[in-house]
Length: 435
Image: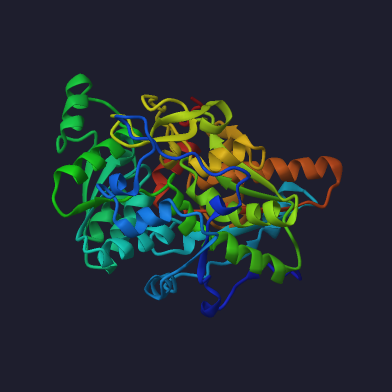
């Protein structure tokens, strides 16, 4: 094969700054609101659950924020991640399109999530925090924070959505291997969890419920802070190392993407690949399309309302202006557990509202159909969440085939699926239905 398919950077080319899209938005982001007074929250209010240094990032309007050298040293365990051209996938689709993917599954935890987990653990550590509480859906975030806490010598407690706790036991085992304590959510460890279990002992849980439990744990346990793996501004900020690297690698490939794709649940991995391209669109007038792919069973961008809502089910968090299906929405038990969240990142939501970001939703049977074709073409088994981005890439490639357009497609393969093989077993057995 004559085509070059693998594009790498040296360790010295790991980005030195994170990009903050809030600096380039046409309108400033709407402020979070106090759940009791409905007035804008102050930094002091947010320090009840986050350390002051991360609160500063959350509310920052600076375009570029330096990455601490200690964080970059840990990033060097797996960054820069490779960019690959999916030539075999292109041939399987019989498309003239060129398809590239940024492979974030190369991290030790198997996904993009360590990009912010390491940063958050570091900032909490230097703030004197010794214990973090968090939630996780499919387990990629929980595993990433558990790893980061292990590397920085911190305790980690994870509330894992029950349906994923039961279906994705290997991710729970990985968190425990890194030293974390893991509970199925709703759990008996919190007042809110016990209340829900009394109402429904078989409650499958949701990210909103798990967030409520982690926040309750934080505010009732001295010396604990809360850590979130998606949605918030500082989380999206930390992920922009992905898109910055991808830009350099695409230049090395001699091409520029017509469309940039990422899956969305809370929005962080999409933000990571897309926000640096949004910066170029907003400041240089380029027209790169930014496409967010979400599950039809939890379609916050394509079916949700853009309004203020709680980030958790119990109504303990500040209200965020975002696309939401309602904080009491209970998603169906789809296999892409990391995308089962009622809301969307306020920054992603604002970009979608202003037309800078497009969105599509997909049923899981079509998603897994594309995932299997990708695995059988490229050799990488993708996580169910990332497979939504693959499905969107397939649609773009098929459209190029119909028109003969030589389109360049870039998507973020944000996690591998080696710990999701029981799900693939069900897919191969024909035991996965659309919901």
